[in-house]
Length: 358
Image (cartoon, rainbow, N blue to C red; front, side):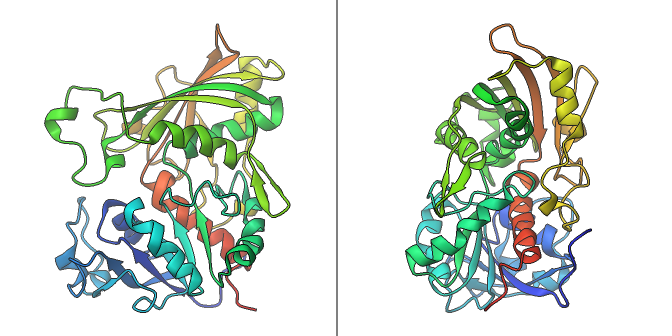
C-alpha cells in the first residue's frame, strides 16, 4: 500500500536556492503534493532581492511565478522559519549553517559532503538503506540537537550504490573498480569553462574519488548501536569530467564472494524493486532500476530522464576477464544524484512519522 498523504502540505525552505541544485529543488517542489516552498535563502549578496532578481535561472522553463517574487532570506534559522529545510549549500557554507539549523530544531536534508561520513548521520537512498534513519535518535542525543541532519550521497556514489546493493545482497561484493564519466552540470553553474571541456576529457575532479570510495560502503553498511558500520569490500574509483550536459555514467568491474553468471546478475537487477519503505512515495520511480538489453545503452541523452530522472538505468552486463562481472549504470546527476535524492529522503521521513513533533 502506498503511504498515506499528509492532511496538509508542509512548508519547506531551500538553502542555496539560487544555485543549480537549488533550482532543481524549486522545480521538484513547486507542485509537490506533500510540500510547498515557503522560503528561499542564499548568500549575503542575494539577501533582500526577489528570487527572480537574485537567481541566474538556467534552463528552458520559467521560474514558477509564486517563487519568482519570494524575497531571498539569509541562511540563518532566525530568518528561515520552516521546520524542514533542503540544503543545496556548498561545503564552505554548509559546515556551519546546517548544524545551526539542526540545533534550532530544524530537519536538514543536505546535499553537502560535510556530514556524510559522520557515523551518526544517515547517508540515505530510500530504496537501499531506509533503516539508516534509525540513527537519528542517537544523533540528536549525542549532539544535543532538537533537529537533525540527513544526507544524500555524492552524485556518482548514488548510482554505484544502487546497482551494487542488490548484487551485494545476492552474491556478496568483494572488490570493485569503478570509472565515472561525469556531466558538466555536476560542477555547478557556470561550471567548467567551455574551452576546457569541449572535445576533451578531464581525468580529475577534486575530492571526488575519495568520496565515492567511502560513501558507497557506508550506504551499504548496517546500523549497530546507534551508528552506521560501513560495508567492508574494496572499491577503487577513477572519476572523469566529460562534455555531457546531464547524466553521470558509471562503469563497474565487480568481484563477488560467489561468482555469478552474467545471466544471474541480470536477473537479480531486473527483478529488484528496492526497499518496501520507498514504494509509493511521490518522487519514487515505479522501478528504481531499469535494465536495457541494447548493446549501446545506457546513454545520458536517451536515458537520463527515466523515471522522471529518478531511475537508475543499467546495461552491458557481461563477464569480466579479471574480476567476475562488468556493467554500466547511468543516472541523472542533478535529479537522482542531488535534489531529487533529498526530496525522496524527506518523503520517507514523512511516511515514517520522523518529522512529527512529540
